[in-house]
Length: 113
Image 1 (cartoon, rainbow, N blue to C red):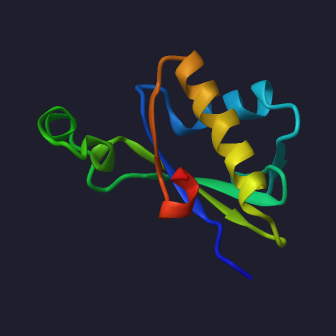
Image 2: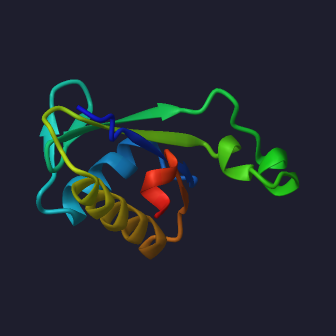
């Protein structure tokens, strides 16, 4: 099985809980799981505070997204295909843009094709 895991780097002043609840509210297919995880289209999502978070590096770096406040890790729990994963990316990135969060995909090359 090919690894179709990816991460979305997110920068916002909202809390992890606020982002978590926003996804559950705005994405009808999302399901709250035990341990502050969300299930969506045969994937589990979890938030991590970025230990390298640095507002100055966000502004001063070509790869500023590596210093955003949060990482949202998305990984399959069943076999999925690339189209399924791209669907999730589109839903989440559009949601974050709607609420004026900065969000960038961090993934292998095949996700960008």
